[in-house]
Length: 296
Image 1: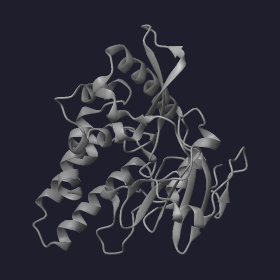
Image 2: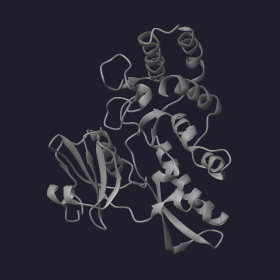
Image 3: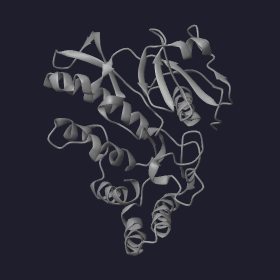
Image 4: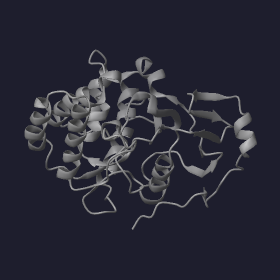
């Protein structure tokens, strides 16, 4: 049975020299920054994500993957602890570039090679067994960390976890009804979802889900020791940014991957995604309906 790691956490296997908190905060090589979080490159081996909006469930996800599904290409978490109420995640730096920076310039055979690597990764994820029976929630055993499940009841937290798909769907619908009632709007759309959403969103098992598969979260590096099946360049891939991961119904990956904000049908990527992410068209369509009402 999986037990989330206690904090402070330090990985016990083959660690590089870890930076001090002063070295982390003094680092000026910034990959990404908001008012509440920052990602910095400390050296060739280490990146650090820290801030008030960095959450422990992201670190727990990396621990779970390393311990229980090591075939999934993900960064290793070296350490996780709090400093001045900010969570510090010290992680493996992945060599390579974001896929979106090179995808348009790749030859067809090179794109095929990357898709093959992604197929292998997602096949492993789909075969992974949830450590809790009929569980829908985060990899640390907690709530559903997705904006559609951020409580509309005023308690500033995420809903869940849920036992069973029907409870998961009911939680989603109930959150929309709470939004409608808070805004004192007519509840006809809530009644529509209460009647029809359970009919479509049924028969799905808990599935290990990344939850934000877009090109910028796929790091690729050329592997000069291997050629693709067509004789061209071959690549290794690593999936990063696991903060939206969890045990979700198996339609959830395609719903997240097809988010209109980063899914354009005039690009070949939108068609290639269905080669490694299992698509559920009816479920995806219904989820985009409620996403437009509850999430935007």
